[in-house]
Picture 1 (cartoon, rainbow, N blue to C red):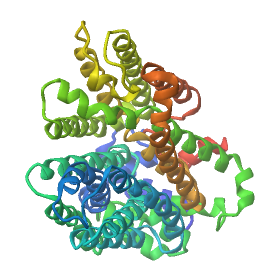
Picture 2 (cartoon, rainbow, N blue to C red):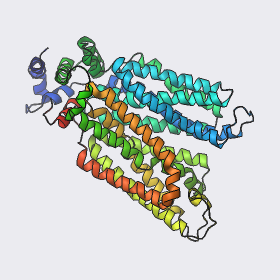
Picture 3 (tube, rainbow, N blue to C red):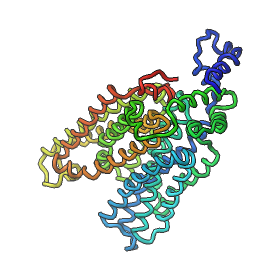
Picture 4 (cartoon, one colour):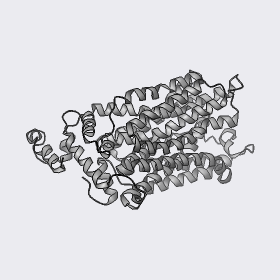
Length: 498
């Protein structure tokens, strides 16, 4: 059906109703359409899909309470030494890198919904293997499988939500991905206080089981269906997501028009198109800068800082997780009002200040008389004449708050918004691969940086990176708040969107 015909139906066919709602006659086509949208089932579909990121969060959080149990377990077949414990925690990253690549292929071949349903299987199988583990290798295999599922999830869910949601709520709903990740981490920390590692694995397997069940009743995204030429199914999906009163044929025609303009399938030659390579570069740099903020280094020290505040390490981890949940929720609530750029800038500035003050703390500690130790032991072993623990604690609080407000949730949200439909799977896979690879590189080189640059120099390096990401955000990142996905694509192409 022609786009102009749909516009007439929207703006003229229902003119009397609009005159009552908009007596000035100034309501745009988009506003007229959104005024008829009901979001209840959209929220339901979002809730079902974000059980995936919650499962991902449980995977990330599982190792923290489980490793102490496995280090002290009486069964020698399952007891982990220091090196095995390190692999138990880090092998998830290896699985996630593979999962990111697999997810990029799956979303283009079988769609967003089926990809999300299938990724629940390695979650369930992985935790089942951990529950039944009889040796260390079974623990490794279980963790690798849950890492694989986490990689797929970190790619598929942001795409699924961004392609379902309309522009008025896309930022809030997209931010729920990171919110559920940190909620899952907090859940694993909290459950680890009261149950041992096998029962904790049972608890962790509940969200992916619910994910598979709930997604059976949710629709495929309209944009994927239209890219496959399935207009009738796309209209049914939109009717489910927008409610019975919305003239979904208009939105369907608008998306279809944008899909036809882009062409049918992705070719490597498309990378010459500024509408493809510009958002790809932006997406990759967002993932690089997210890891270069120093989040992994800060979390490395979080337990020690909490212990200095006379909190048990496991309780401190729960409190850190709680702060992340609260401020990620705040970011989700204000995302579609404040905008992505503003929150990223505020977040970057807060992290730059906090990592600078961390550097100052480490520098002052290094000047205090103490027993010579490795750089990594500076916090735990220093006995300073001047008590500066408050500086480390304030820096930790500011950093976690800043990260949760911006650079935690927003990079994945923006990644899901800026790519054209035909390259969304490929480009998202590149971004997810970059993110996990950078996480691995930063984690593995962190000890070397501490040795060669000193503790203070390492955190000042992170502060410099945070300052650069603020400049990058201001200069190169377009604001996506309140824009349709097609309008965002047009910004990068340098044309006017529908």
